[in-house]
Length: 51
Image (cartoon, rainbow, N blue to C red; front, side, top):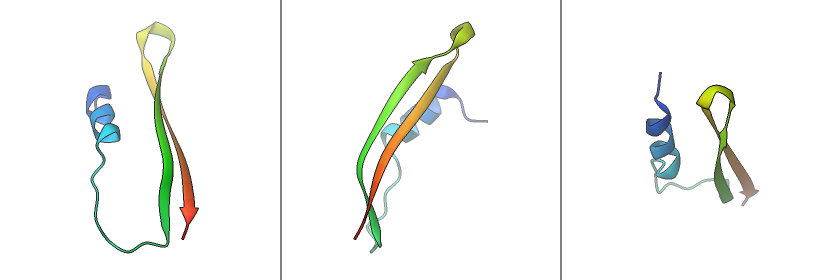
């Protein structure tokens, strides 16, 4: 299982490939929500445009 900090680091800097695609991510955002008992949740918001 991936630790929270490992997941956050991957979400902040995802691996990228420069390849042709039929879509692109136009907007993304990462929010952290404090949950009960001190745990955290990450919400990744994306808007995908078809080219």
